Each structure stands twice: as structure tokens, then as C-alpha cells.
Image (cartoon, rainbow over all chains, first blue to last red; front, side, top):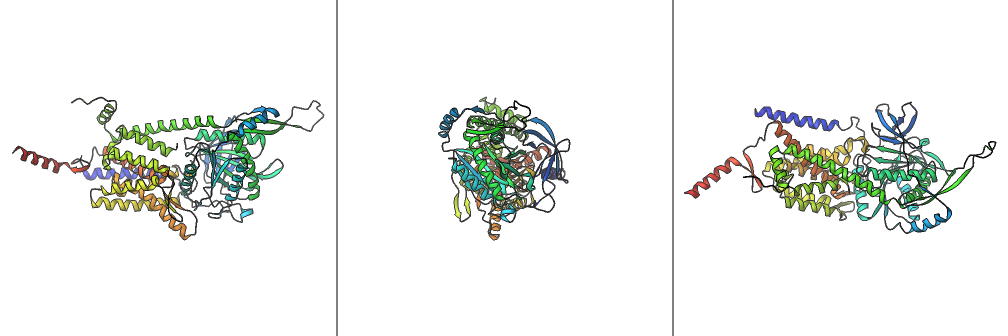
Length: 391
Length: 232
């Protein structure tokens, strides 16, 4: 009898261990295997087979994608071997609208907003400290001294020029393996601990897709696009999404072509640590670092306005010409005022925590059911509400 | 507030309301001691890391207090066998966590379980399989992750990598703390399911008395003798 139950226990443990290990991916990959000759990136297609985007990280069913023209997709199936994924179109995302202002009210708002910046800091770090740009750095990966730090410095300096307290932590998190995010988590916590109150936390990376996927022209200047990556697995998702949408909305008007797209993936990317945490992909390994550094200064302007508010100008197509024979399309400059992000973000983070507490409570309830018998539970609850046990 | 911190507060509240006491009993901890340690982990997390060397530092909430708790739990281990098992489980968990760091995909989205929790689960499973107790699991969860970090630090030094080793550097939300708690949780869930499957504990003769698990058969016999003597 005892032998039987022991073997049953062993099988139960074995089954549980097997279930847990099968939850891990089948294709085990060693760090930095993106740079093989064969394309190491995933390509996403829509239902008609039209290419939407590509990304060095793995794509999974239920990941979400927001294209440059704000079309919202959900990944429906993934061909892991062929490194292809297909997405279902969900509709158009509504980005925040900003109030159009005149020259006079614009100057007044600038004065009012200048005082609101306070001492809230923007924190920067690079989880993959080896990521580099081949045309400028000579190789895609330089352990502990990646070219990504030069881009991060440009971004930090540009933020500081806007009067923001920007802090860049240059701690190395190499080797570029599964432990990198665990190590960069310590950096992020340390940054938050030392620089409260925090306005936003950005983890800066670069992608590993072909050069053309990131090349762009903004204001007539050649530079790199920037992708925003949001993690689905955390309670700050709404707050992070809100900042990402504001960044895209401002950039699309002020510097069209700067923001590549938004990818909402399965990872957590340390974004649970603070609301308004985002991951930026600053270009790809095939683009020159100088082109990326140029986009970093434009990004600083967009981030500044998205968080602290401000006024930006946008060149928009003017109304249709009165004379149809005039073919040249004219543009009209408009000014928009952005309010600081504060209040809405707090609501987003609060909702996230509430959901987390509900899920935790349900989980613990199930655990209590497993670990206690019915009578013990009833007794425990009775004690909790002050009822005394009957002798 | 991060998931880790929220979880720590939720667990603390549950202890106050008396839920999870059986776990504490098995770890030889009183409610007050447990809450004191948890408060220590939380407060210690806000204190900057203490430097121990050029690229080595330790966090009070993320490593020192969990380590003290692990040593305390270790000292309360009933037998030499359990102590040996705890040490063995901690070393194996360390090896498991280190290997997982090398073999798992380097992008968090490619892992179904987030890197912050996957180490706790790995340490928890290894610890339970080899430690076979809640105490051994907790010790292995805490010490295993720290050992893996130290091993990585040695390898980094040999490879001339400038990456620092910050033991428990993320405080309450570091993999060290998460692994310790997750390992106990796993041990409790596996242990309880196991008991449910086999229709009760295998150690029916054991009972909890004055902070220790004792053999009830011997205890009843002794008590009986004592009472008998008194009556005489």
C-alpha cells in the first residue's frame, strides 16, 4: 500500500515537473544567435499575406501590433520554423487628440508648463549592454561597451537640454543571455530607488532586422525610426500604453516617420517596476549609429512633450486648392498644446494594481482550498470574523 | 508598486489574518517573526546596496535578511539528514538556475514564464525534489539564486566582463526573494496535493508541539507516564 502511494507521489511530481518544463520553449537558443547568415528575425503578415513588419525577437499568438498608420492587429498564428507570423486586423487605434492653439495662447502655455517639470526624473538603462551598430562600431556586439550607450548618451543629453533631470545608468548586464533582464532589473530598481519621484523609465535597445526596415527621413534629414515595445505581462500595461500612444500621437504630427510602430509582446521587460516604463528599439544593427543618434534628439523632444506637456508645431496639408488646375499641394503650419500626463497615468497604474490584487486573492483562495480541509477553512473564516468556536 | 511588492504585502496581510499559518508552522516561524522578516525585506529594499568589493555588492532587503532567515530556518532543521539535504538542494538549485540562464532564450517574450519567476520555479522544483521539505525548499530558493549569481560573477571576472554582481540587488522584487517564496509555495502545493492523493499524511504519528514536530506516539506515552506519576 505504502509502496503504491509512494510511486503515485513520484509520478505526480514527475508529471508536474514535465508540465512546467514543457511550458519552456522547445527551441533552446544560446545568446546572440541573431547574427547568423540566415535571417534571424520574424516577419509579420496580415490576413491577405501583405508584409506588416519584422522583429528580431520571437513573435507569439496574441501579441499585438500597431502599425505606423495606427492599424491594430493581433497575431493569430505563428510558423516558428519559417519565422513567419500572421495577424488579424482588429481596427484602428484612436490616438490622443491635442488642442489646437494660436500663437498668443501658445506662449502663455509655454510659461505655465515650464514651471511644472519639477524634479521628476527620466531614467535610462540598457539591458543588452553589448548591442552595437555594425557600420559605426564594426561589429553587432561589443560586450559591456556596446554602441547603444552612445545612443543612450545622446538621448540623455538631449533630454537634459530640455530641462529634464535625465539619469543614464551604464551598468553592464552581459552576458547577453536569459539572465540579462534579471540583472537589468537590479539596475532599474537601483535607478528608481535613487531618483524618486520618477517621471518615466526607458530601456534602450536596438533591433536586428534589415537596414531598410528602420531607415527614414524626418524634416528632410536621414535618420533611424524608433519602435516602442510594451510588455503585456504586467500591471502597468495601461499606463505604459498611454505614454506610448501619446509619444506616437505627438511624433506623427511633429516629426512624421520617426515612430516606426508599437509592438505589444508577451515579455514583462521590467515594466512592472514603475508606471510609464517603455522599451525603445533605436534602429537596427545594420544602420549607422550617427543616424540613430539623430533620431535620439528628436525622440527627446517628443518624450518631453508627452510627459511634461508643451506645445508643438505640425505641418499639415492645407484645404483643397480653390482652383483645381493648381496641382501642388500646400501645407499649413498648426500648433498644438499637450497637457502633462500625470493624472491619467495614475489611474492606469491603479487599475493594474487592483486587478493584480484580485488575481492574487483568487490564487491564494485556491491555494487555501488545496491546503486546508473544509472544516479548517470554516474554522479559520469563523475566527477571522470574530465568531468563537462552540465547545 | 510592482507585482513583487504587492505580493509581499498581500502575503503579509494573509499572515495577519491567520491564513498560511501551516506553512509558517512547518518553517518553525511565528507570525510575528515572519512579519518582522517581511517588514525587514521591504524596508531593506529601499536602502542602497552595500559594496563588498569592486564589482560585488549586497542588498539588505534582497539578500542579507533573506539569508538570515535561511540560516535561521536551517538552524531549526530537525535532523542532520535534513541539513545535508538542504545544502545539497541549494547547490543543485544554484547549478539549475545557472544552466537555465545559459540555455533559456535570452528574450523574455520567448519564455512562457517570465525570467523573474522561472528561476524561482526551477529552484523550487529542484529544491523540493532533493530537499523534500518546505524549509529545505526555502533555503535552496534563496541560496541557489545567490550561488548562481556568484558563479556568474566568477565567470564574468575570468572573461573580463564588467558586469557587477549585486546579490539581491532588486530588493523585495529580486529573483532571490521571489525564488525563496515561490519555492516554499511550490513545496506546499506539491506537498498538499501529494497528501490529498494518498489520502492524508504519511507521518500521521507526527504532530506540532511547542514549535517543533514531534513523534506523537512517543509524546503520548511520555505524557501518559508523567500523568501517571502525578496521580501517584
